[in-house]
Image 1 (cartoon, rainbow, N blue to C red):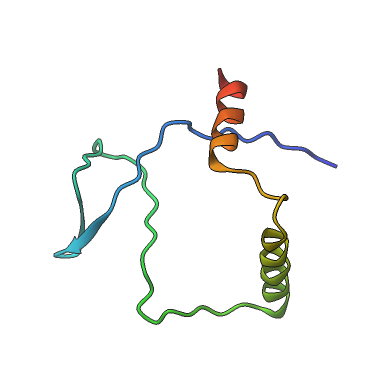
Image 2 (cartoon, rainbow, N blue to C red):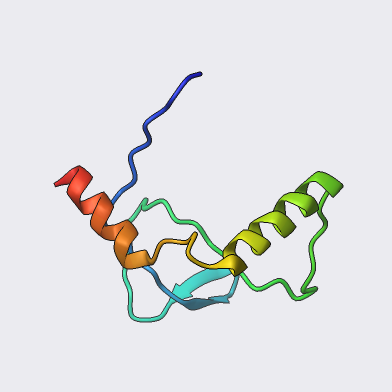
Length: 86
């Protein structure tokens, strides 16, 4: 078994905005030229397609989250990351 250790940047910005003239205009946040970004957008269709395997995985994950006690708060995750990366 190969175990890979991934590093995640601890400093991220979360921003909202709108597409204006084909370009993303952010509300109250500026980014450096060349910054890498990930954009999540509402889907006007409001649906997506899953394979049967993906649907089963999603349903199992939702059931696990609903059971409670098996999730970790964002605060705990951030504290753990801070301890790892000092």
